[in-house]
Image (cartoon, rainbow, N blue to C red; front, side):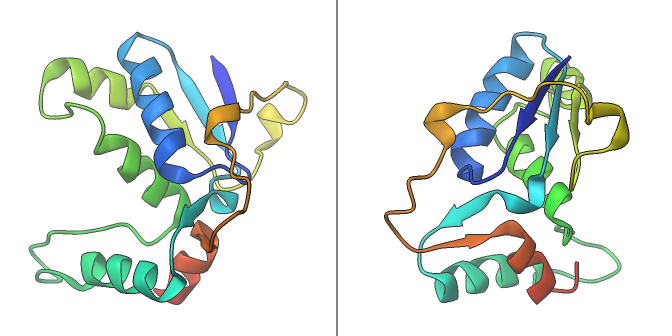
Length: 135
């Protein structure tokens, strides 16, 4: 089981690395999901996620998550063929947590270097997006 720290990582880049490794058969745990970032103009990002959350009927869907750990999990799901058996089994091997749970406090977490942000552009934390929409 691999533990990946998502702190200051770009969510999309992190998700693509995680999806590839899940399809290879690895079990992955992502911690600090609320500290991962989405790059771009904050107002545009809020509009983008707001449209996703408010789209559809509240009883019949489509439903989009509001919690940061579920948003990151959904981003990874978009990079998997989750409607096929191979993608379903890969998606079941993924666990995402908001902070570092007690069982993973003493384990060494991996940081994906190519997903780390250098903060050269505007960005928003997933936690801020979640708070904006009641997550």
